[in-house]
Image (cartoon, rainbow, N blue to C red; front, side, top):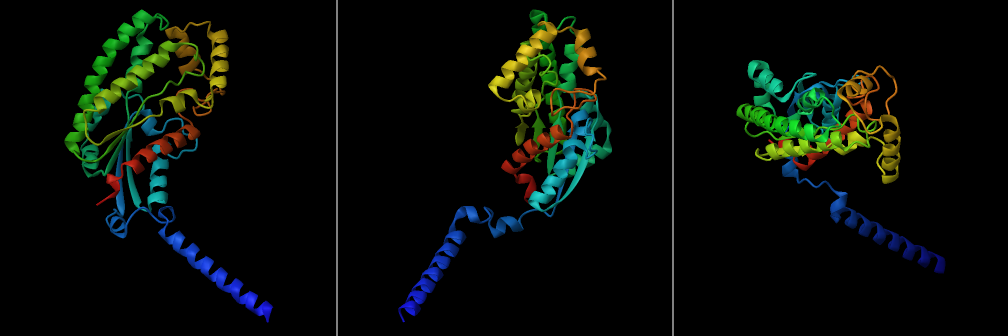
Length: 306
């Protein structure tokens, strides 16, 4: 008899525990979607994304042939947000900011797709900076480099403003997600601050210009792609010591191009960059770029709403 009573007590206790657990699970904000039914109803079933830019948008260096960050972004949005994604990639290797704008102005196809886009992603600025650096007689002459960069930066900001103004002319409201540039040779010349500073200043100029436009969000990949797997202070220190031994604190235009950009070596110190050219992201690098832009797109989701 006592055993039966005990069984009833245990049974009732378990039932109450399950009810309480179910109630907590239902009411706890972390256990349910953060979107109300009306919000879910107001989501688009098809999202149109346009990618403008240079070789990073084109997907150069992606040995997995998934279209760089654009192909991966299309897949990620579809899987995470459960919508169909129409992606138009207008990236072209080698293009500077003014050339990206010229192609847009001269292409009815690009204009039509930009007008219809719910979101616009862009890579720009790397080739503008590279043009300045490769013109430098000796990059390690800081005074000369600083002067050249100052002049080039002013010109670049004007070109970038013109490009963004043109994009906004065709589409005044779609959010723009604009990537920063990174230093592809950092792991080889970690001891030289000239290039690191140049990239940082270039990104500051980009952000200043971008700040003049509404619904424009920066996607900062500079540090992540520049340092690669060398993230800790100890790794950075060792990297700088090794670089100092290898380059003796000097970097000329000739060895800048020969040792890095035109290298035929199959080895690459940076795990996120292509071993074919030591410049563009590899598949791992493009996955990183995809995660970073997707995070910004999730933080600013107006593109997903009707």
